[in-house]
Length: 254
Image (cartoon, rainbow, N blue to C red; front, side, top):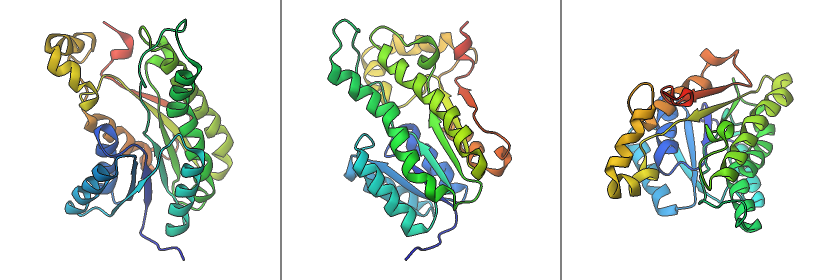
């Protein structure tokens, strides 16, 4: 039996960083937020934090690269609530660095699975429930690396993110007849725990990154969350197949 809890949003990879801020913002926008991750203790803490702010929240622990786990969990969420209104495919990452000559097939498949397969698995499973939602939308994450192919050793990361850019547009075409919108955000350099190591060991390098950003500062997770909030809202009801750069002009260089 399904239960109606108003608007339902799923945010993958949301136990920290940008994903958690996105979940919090959507919760404040009135969504019941389902956060996903693989660190169950962190998930429980994050749900408690959201609930302490008056947000309806649940945690579902599964690996977004595991096809069966993604499918069964998203189906369980959809069946429980009777619909899904927003799917934010936030999970992803660099996965490490490797030049192509030394790259193992295992590494290649790991990075592609994390960034591209995960979007396919989650979106496919969510579509039947998005059809039952209101102002339904999928929001993906790409990267500048999808255009510039990434730095040394990040070529396959860039390749995977280029795939996300294209699958966003392809999904938008495929789902337009159902009124389901699909867009992407492309965050620039965002100040999150992802950069904690270089921030602590090479603060001068970390500080220098801002010099390559037109607005003169690094992004904050809230900067991305605000754009995702807009894309999930009725204010974006006529916006689909787009990628929004959230990088303070970083993509243009200085």
